[in-house]
Length: 130
Image (cartoon, rainbow, N blue to C red; front, side, top):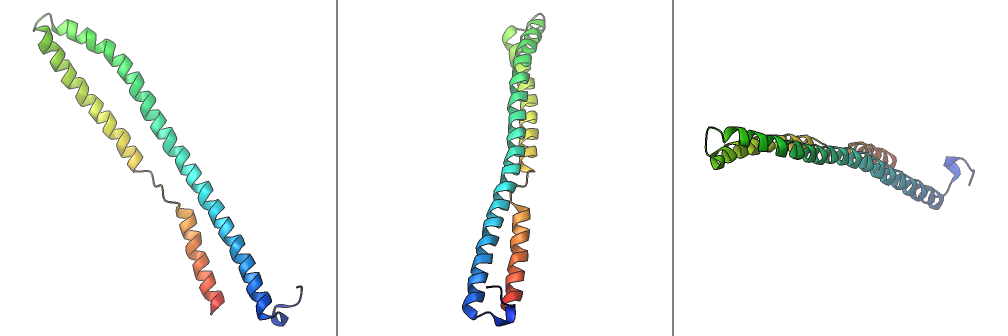
């Protein structure tokens, strides 16, 4: 099969096209897999950071909440002090969850590199066919 391109039969050309197309598809699948793994790793780190931060915040806030409620109960009824502190803490927690959700939504999970190379491959195949 080492004959010059001009001397190869149509069957040989189709066989070569098939082999090269298979190799191209394998490479594109590998690129997509690699790209998605990288993106999933980044998202996993963001989620892990969000979870650990929430747990630490929760532990610290429990102690602070108890102290604030006890302090406020000197001037107002204990139930009212607990309600006021609870509402404030819930508002802060809501803002932190919203910030984490916004960061996750900003992650682009589409395999952009693979999409771009597939477009290039399509253009190349169209040029080869004409």
